[in-house]
Image (cartoon, rainbow, N blue to C red; front, side):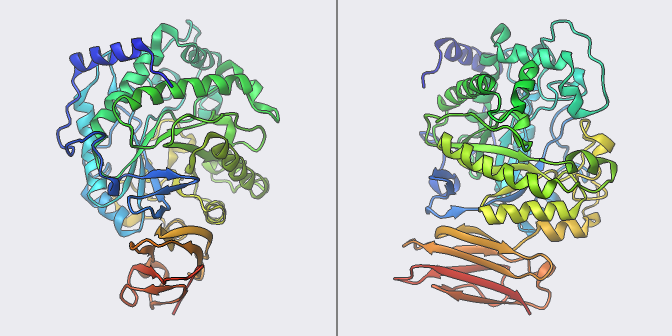
Length: 489
């Protein structure tokens, strides 16, 4: 892929205007990242610097209101929050970084905004929590009761917007649809502006340990082409444009960072049970496929306190299958970056169980409510807590399903994984490799094993202390398979 000359020229102008200092960030080498603290793709897997397969269990943290970053407060995100995530076994966060914050004025990067995001990045990285930087948007801009894109980038053709009071339906209104159409048509060179904002972000954090990578855009809408996405072949023409847009941004990021994963996301209707993704192979070895699974009536009913419908059990596995097919076609690794947004624990349990079966990592939506403006019913059902300001108000049934025993890093290739949150019974099998680094399994002792646990292992030796919250295994020479079972005392 070749970066357009006018993109490079624009980037030079932006750095002259806005500055992109790296204060608070480790010094960079060629790409500025140590192999031990960056992940790379190996086939379908994400692997660390010791070539161990990494499985992610984490949460979304997106502050959608101006100034588009969480405050350093009990309600927002501080030291106590970072400690809480680490102490409860979560090893990844999808952190909202909004285009409106990065480039509030056309052509000008705001380094002060990047400083505020960096405060959260440093808290997480210091606790070895992987950070996925996400250019989040919902319905494009505040003008449409959403957020994400700056005001200067709204090209709605003068069509009046009528707020339907539904986040999803607002996407389908003429004003929002035409605004997205103009984005995909690259009106007024917006692609280069967007790519320049991403390049500023990548330059800032290219040398930062525990950066999971860069997610180009959240839930892009097909605009007036959305109706073409509903058939069995999906929206072929639009997907080609969407891939071209994301490859354009990828090219720009690669001018400053050739190391970190760059994550593509499909059009937002991909997660529904019909249709498919049509991305083709991406000519970059470090690409990820970010996808969501709100595949059933639960996504609409839960906001009103109603249970999920019977279609969920049928539709949600379909999305896992589609995601695997799409990631394979792209030559990408795969990550479920949104699901849940509900207090329906049975639906959450089914989805994380499917993730175990499919050996896929996940990021639950959401850590806290944070006055989410795009959520029906105020978003209270989405959060892990009944009060954002009080971590002691965690919802116990939801936590019991999400805080799971799981292999955070594996010295080998995963074969099968299961966990029962009701009994604490855990089973894991993998094909070992010759790595000297250990396999590490997180065990939530206080929550699921208050009387301790028993670990039965074949093909490897347990090297951690009895009852440890991190079970470490050293592969035995000549073993063809490692089998691990954990049961509660």
